[in-house]
Image (cartoon, rainbow, N blue to C red):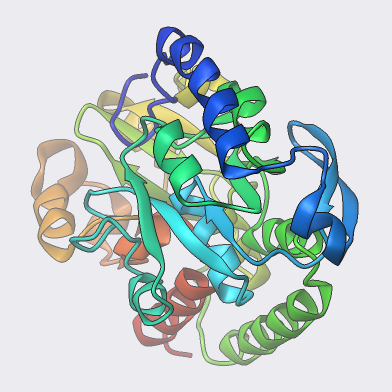
Length: 334
């Protein structure tokens, strides 16, 4: 599947080969010590295992974190980590700067800069941001894992997958890696209390729910293993399991357990009697979709069991998960 939303990082091999020499030259000019010298050594370093290996020279207390994954930036901001710059992703889930809607205002209040926009890695701009720690993604459209060797020559670099994991577990991994375990505990305890309160305020449908996104030609259905699915499960919802014979290959060649794809013509049997929860759509898109021929007769549509999880629900973090809880309280009052 080749959709704009689930496109893997573009082929950058030739450009990275050319830039490799530039990295070596510029990092030397900037005084970067990839073995943990300088300021990092003065403040102490730690060894961290992540999704691209083990990094032995991670600053114990980083001062200049550069995030190369707009998806991961929200987790860092929620932990109040010292993010000085982030990749931006112009599109339907972002503000005009390219910051995700759920944390855009927080980023601006903290003067977070844009290191580069889009999914094409720009090593020169990463160097110019003078990071003492780089955080990148090992999955999805903003993945920079193929450039890991180039990045770790600039500064200690940690890579994390964000598929097949709840946002809480991802926040825990990131927070522990950057030395903010206490902030992780504070944040997750706060959210656990929010979930407990929401469970008393929401009426859970008797039918399973299908969190999904309509891409026009295909439909992306979020599974119980997705961040969205795990949030719904924590509230007592049963997440629809799409029959195997109706599943498409899925993004990244079907190597992800958090989403499956279905063809439009298989919509009815794939969803069955499930209630529908739209992920990452605006109200006009949801209204228009429900009037389409293959959608109009679905039990969820005729039974008025269609719900909006919000534009910001496409990528889950503390900010968007909190917003989803609030929307569910309004849409399904007990």
